[in-house]
Amino acid sequence: MPVVEAVITVPVPPELAFAVSQTTAPVRYRWDPFVREQHFTDGATRPGKGVRTFTRSRHGLAMVSEYVSWAPPSHVGMKMVRGPWFFEMFAGGWRFAPAPEPGHAIATWRYSFRCRPAFLRPVADRIGSWLLGRDIRRRIAGYAAGCTDPEVLAAARRSLAADD
Image 1 (cartoon, rainbow, N blue to C red):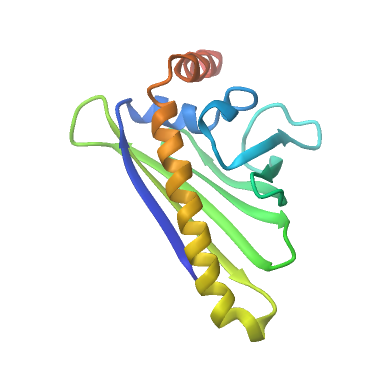
Image 2: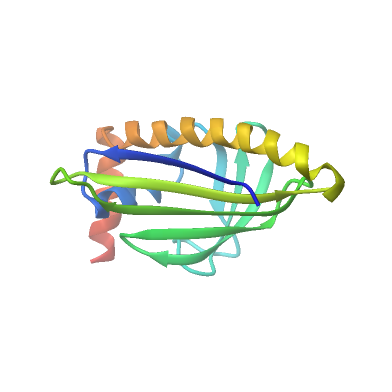
């Protein structure tokens, strides 16, 4: 099963790095170049284990995903519930850890997937790794920019204050 990973160091502590990663529309659209539309489903108003989200990518593809882990400020995980026909399975996890430099965090984003149909998997998985790798690198770079954007940081800080 292919795994695609991107790692970046951001100039905010892990709890704020995590909060930035969980911002929602319209703030999310300031930093996330992958997402064109995203919202919670089933009446949820906040992220958490078992919560589902609808996401439409910049490519026009739609996916419903479910949080399978929720452990602020260290990690979050999701799995695809419904999505593009060519994914048999898709899952991702984002981890946030203190960086060696005080007040900084290391963000590690890892995705795994399996393409279908099975007879095309050897080629489809290689193409998928290349495309997803390119998107995840762009996305994590946008996230790093969001970690320096005053509007994004203000929204993330508000969410942290609401959790207290």
